[in-house]
Length: 597
Image (cartoon, rainbow, N blue to C red):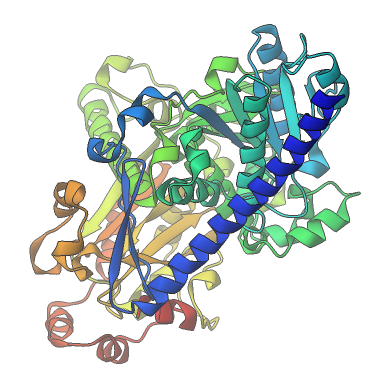
């Protein structure tokens, strides 16, 4: 009886401690934000597990994060202490996250691996009760029998989080739950081998990654016990093309966030910002911000279609391990902690862009190797199963038959040899004239209104050749320099029928050199060229035989660059207001202008 009472008292104290810790963490973050507001023109640098970030009030500064750990800030104790790896599962509702989780737990049970599970997608949870239990319940009998460890055959413990999304509205609750999970395990005399977080169908993995990085920067005690290790995204193979062709926001697709009979959960979650994003934009983030992409329900696609999907996803994220599976049956080693905290969890958006540029440059080199060894033969063959929205998708509608006979010694990628998917980088050191760029963007087979705070539909002659070239694109993304701003770095983002060009942050050239992270100076300088520093156009284009349309696309974009006379005027202007007056733009909405001012 005394043991039970002590346990119950400890449990209550632990709950209060965790709640206070979470509150202090939230207050700390709020105070930091308020401090940045008060320091109008000051810059603060913070270090994050070997990654540096620049935070500056009223401005969004580009993140330049490195996977190299700065040894000067790692204590000997931290080096020796093994942290519990955390694996994050992302993917739309219905993709198979819970099915994958069941398979992982079965394999873990057979291997006697102790798993802690935090599930945010409560509406979609249907995990076999034989595989999991709550670590916070039924302890009276366990304490009485002196059985504090997980009983044989039940190696996983399960916690649910609801009424919000861990990427935004209940991010702090996630860390409070993780703290309690780890603390209770310690009290019971063991540590988890792994922790798995299953997010909601509309969670943004970059936001969750940022939360972990912020917690590390703020030296949250919990981060001495755990670390975000691997980001896994589950994709519904059969529904990918439908989602890719979607133009509506996630808020218009409740089936992606909650079950039909769980309308309340979806209504509550509409306050989360992720629901205002385009379906395809969120789909791409889940794929591009991942170490492992599992193409589930692979049996629902024909072999050629599945191969094409695998190729497209590999082109979207060249750093990820892309695997196919049926009913979430993936090897345990390919899911749990497979990235060793050296992949997507340790980097930021700028690193993701650099990887995409490197991949495109390799693709260009491979293409030249192919041309040197093989004739130009393009015979594609594939079937098409998605709905009417795919009618505008040239990638899927063209009736080709594809057969390459050259061998892989020509250094050709699978994407190029099987489906003709390759990429190139458009790189220039002169700003775009906003109005001329807007006219080119109207040629995209996409809804471009999201990129402008004011957009008028006008009749204009279509360049059929350019429009056809754009239709063959799978993805285009990268940094964009507009003549309307000398400070703001815009981000070109296009996929399917979606296009946006938000302000990503400020160019490094706008920051005083003494505020550059000391261990990143070389990497920053690598992007500099001449008096305008790192300001540039650097856009990656990925698509069906993209290289054959490279000149057409580049010529169209070159026509949007400032002429010599315009560039001379631009260099003489000495204020952002003067540049906006001379080169008016509808790209920046009023809120972005205030942030970047």
